Length: 488
Image (cartoon, helix red, strand yellow):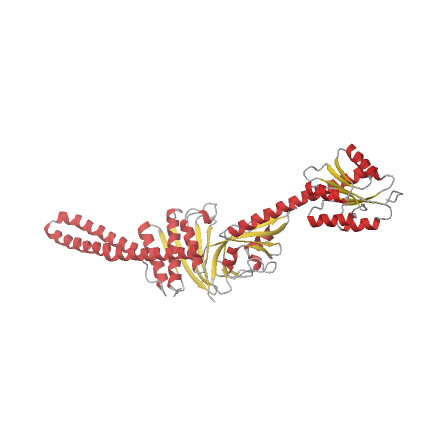
């Protein structure tokens, strides 16, 4: 503003606790009164001092929110006053009032932090309230922004501490998969510390499916959550660490959306289930050993006793034919029942402790499974295997046998099937075990929620690198397929 006003400048100060109070620093008593009146009519509380020393003393006892400063005081230059207040840490927001020709000085003070400046002209007093209100509005906005930033910083700090305190591995990435945050548990799980902004998705580790198949980055659960914009639940995978060791994990990636709904990244929690999987394998091994022990005891103990009783009853029958023909028929019936009991005990012992599973053992075991099912359950159960399929790995053959056994039991118990077909085939892709029945279809629910039996079947398949599928047939019945790929 160009004017004929005297060359001087004034600063206005507002108390933080009382935003309406203002401090005016000017060595012109008449100008002080005019400013006080103009601001007083607008409802502001104004304090006035006429020198730099008085301003320093006042600010030493009061917190000011805004100061209107005359740059050319008699005792201290306005710029020097700002310097002294800066050393004491008491510089409030300030507005410079300067005379004609001092615009360059005013611009310099603006660069040093002044909110605004006014030139003393004929309309100076008229403009003071407007400029003050504008400055106070700006101060309020800056304070609200600072409070919001502080609240955000505190929130982020709480979030960071919470994430680092979690026992599970947690990390975040942006939409391109670059890792932006991770906790100590993630470093322990990965076996190394990732590089923020460089490592992608799962820390640039080699990822595998539960079956041991290499998992491309595009199929990583985090990448899927970002691309689909939907959370992924219970995604199981294997992380191969730099030292070659592996960790089985469950991933729970959740996409992060911005205010417009666009995916800006994802947060993932990884639960290390390596120990759980080891215990599950150990539990199945213990169960297998217990089955074999019980089956062997049944065969060698109760089976032998029943066989002995059958032989005694046969001898008794022969003796009674000549001495007491009427009782011979009852003895013959007893002998027949004992023979059936011996047969059932033998079949049960074979199902608990099947024949050795290496080589042709799986085919023999499945053949006996079909025979015992037909004999005990009175259900037509057939085993088909042409040409022969040899499985030389004992663990693989045992798991395949138990999968077939569980599928047959489910067909009898839940499907009420009348016919069951067990098929074992082999081709260039690998070995396929299929159990098909003509019973009731599966309920329309997720397989994972249908009971321990199916979950154990899935686990057995996964432990040997096979995939298990269960489907309802078009007409009626269920088909269980276990596909074991050819190992390279």
